[in-house]
Image (cartoon, rainbow, N blue to C red):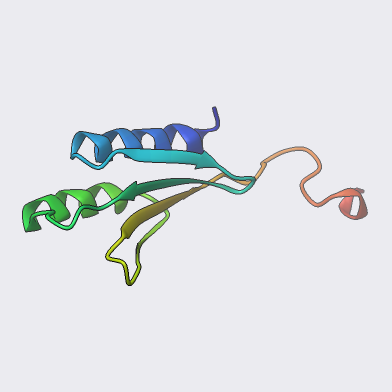
Length: 92
């Protein structure tokens, strides 16, 4: 699993421990973590949740008119440091 996947899995585990079961999804350039947020989340729980997602490269909250709320966080994958980074046109 890439380092971003490990970081995302750790974020997901911490969110789950706070009562927000989270799912992790791998993408080509990043890994996402999503969790449904219940209506009755206390202010203290929100602070703890925000402390967790603050460790990601980006996070946000998607709220719908149906009162559904999905918390998301993104962990970017590192760019390759060796090899054919620029593609064939950048080879020397």
